[in-house]
Image 1 (cartoon, one colour):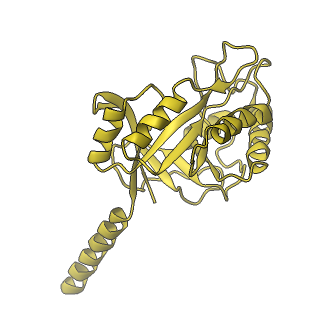
Image 2: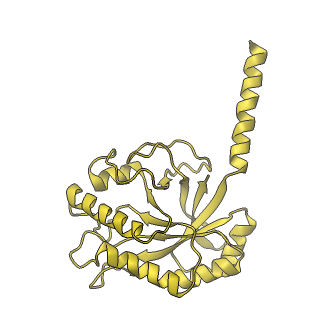
Image 3: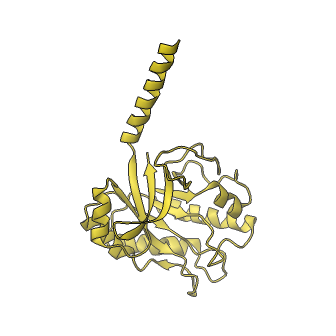
Length: 231
């Protein structure tokens, strides 16, 4: 029995190592990031970059705008050797002055198409920003807004997913188990500093996540990055 237990333990460790070997490490940025910084992360083993392409711009009327750092960050990541690049969208929500979901999606899609940018996946960032007071319209209205963004992205035919966490999802929708579309890829956040797809806390109907953001706002390679691991 002891020999069997030891063999089984070794087998589990090997399987875990194999799974990790086929995982992808990624960094994401919003601030302007140099080519040298991206190249440094590439040399450290990160093979995917995720760049903020759209932000709230809640001081504008209407709110919602292309991130001013997007194009330069994309160019710098490409020149640094990244061929696997995603984009994330932090939408304007919770204000009467925000553009509609469809307008915001169209803004980003048109810019990407105009500049012939190659994007693997677009992620809709669903989290509270206390500075801007987003998602302050109550659970029912927030759910409606999420459905509008879902419909807007589905109309593009592009591959897109959701970035959030159990606590953020519950705070915004009023129910951690409320389902938007659990067939979408999920990038979830648990800052345990552990680059493994584990410790997932179920929400939104997703049985598991595609990516886990395990550390945030880390200073290395002379820049600031969030760290994630993906299948």
